[in-house]
Image (cartoon, rainbow, N blue to C red; front, side, top):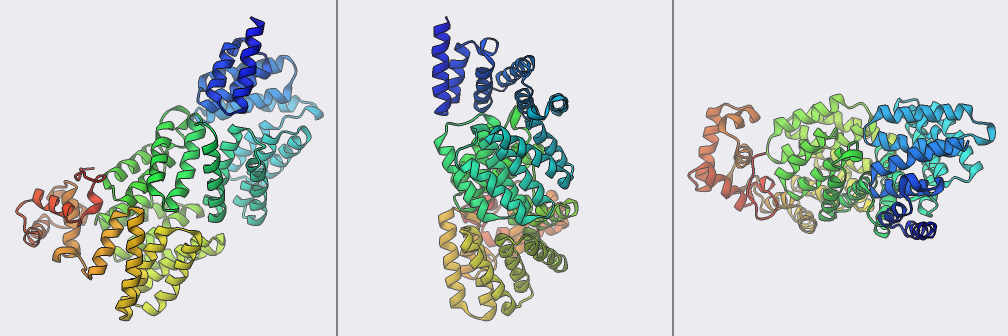
Length: 560
């Protein structure tokens, strides 16, 4: 029996080294499982089970490892088990149980001798301080954890404490120092010094921190590409690890114009994060999925994904407002974006919402509010020193100048935005800016230059699969303010008809009387040559007037 167990453990070690965590777990079970393994093998089993998504087995192994370490007087090692138990429970939203394990770890830290000081409880303590806004207080705690890591040669602890220190510095306004810490931490990750579960967590933390705190798209792109390469080299993880990695990778794929690839990754991420330990992060995955559907023109699927994001505690704006705007529901778009701005205090969140706010508020006739949004965006772009925010700011200011018929003021701003988008390799934003440049050229009376910009935008949108934007650029190329002689208000009404709304519901959405809606419908029937609402909806879809109200190719409009 002993020889058989040793053989299983040798196989488990080989499988663990080759990142075949599920098969390694089978061998650990065959070697004795949670009750029969020695403590070092028990720790390895816990790691493989946690990565592979066998959460309950991982927790059982960690709890037994903690007890065995304590019995042997291994305080530092026991505190590491307590940390991973805390992490497992917190990821699952079980904060009371997680807090209980951290309380045990802190008691161990207080009773440990100078040469046996545990470092992992300091990481959990720092998380709490950063979450409560005590950034400066977190820094000495993380420095102490770094010192423990260097003294013990713990690469995971060193990378974790270094990266969290970078986040605390960035949140406290120390940009240069914070980015230096992030770069230092990611050196360990990129060189393969960290364990797989720590690697996955730190990739997501670094990308999220750079995107949300400083809008540093250069680092986001570099680390997202590295994350994608790493994911291709390792087997799929369990839910919280692999699913969250897929979400961050997909967000960069979307910005790079690889929408269908991003959507496939996000469908998988949402499936993996739908239960248990993914509950805290699945909202982000649903929002990214909604954004991909919106850009591709799948309005019903986008709306369902935004709702799923909201139900999971994730964001819905500014994407939902842009979806409403594309469907012609300007009042709902404006109400959503203004609500998002009124309740958002964090600069990083406002930086996400403000560019869309300018577009939506201009469509709603709120020029003053649009200008205020653009002015705030300019302040944030300067504070963050982010090329992406500079581009968004220049594009927003150029859009306002076009609304004011000031093509001379618009063109320099829009060219700046276009150059920045190109340098970042964001094709969709580059093409949208080309459409604005074309509008400025038309205001200047240069029809030929406008056609060149529109032709460029059309080719980009075709390559991306951006059906709604392609339809818009085609209308601009035809010079039609609206297709088939429809007024802009008639198009708004028609879009809502395709979604199955009644006259009363349309009137409520657009702040019109039912009599006015009926009059618009009569005009629509005449212009389209149809005799009913059903015919009008079918005609709108078939002729590309209401592309955004379609389901994926070949489908029919669905009521949300």
